[in-house]
Length: 147
Ligand code: HEM
Image 1: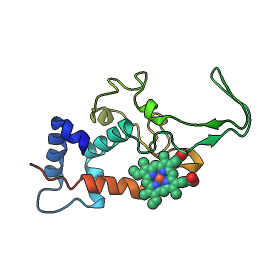
Image 2: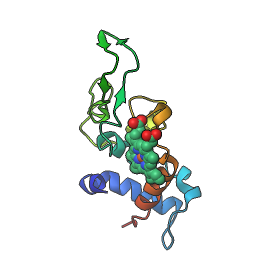
Image 3: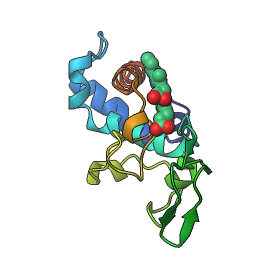
Image 4: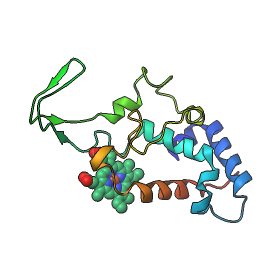
């Protein structure tokens, strides 16, 4: 919501979409989330810039591993800085800007398969609350009333 308030054009687009798909006088329902691509893009863009768990949960290397030119010794504590990944200019154009539209043309999702966007982590320890959290975030943001 803070990003939408600072980006009136994105706010207008989100409100337009809600007005078109949901109308006024009632709130969005869970089954309607799929019909709101711009709202979904706003939420992805927010997770990219502001991941609530910016370093995920710490991992420990079970055995010495080589990744690219780095050697991770057995027993090392490994932190994954998804805050930095979300702002990496090699991955995202204009990474500091709030541009939900980038997700209308990209198929990147946050379900753990696309490592450039993993606000819920990935692999065996991926957030088990993700399905609930994703629905809640869309439903809460989806009640913004069109102006
Ligand atoms: C926007 C909301 C949420 C975000 C961004 C989030 C994010 C995360 C992240 C990044 C992890 C660590 C995953 C990893 O390191 O690979 C995690 C773990 C976890 N989350 Fe969430 N979470 C959210 C909501 C929830 C909710 C609603 C629940 C429960 C109803 C929940 C339950 C858990 C639990 C139990 C773990 C630990 C899993 C494990 O260590 O095996 N989370 N979450």
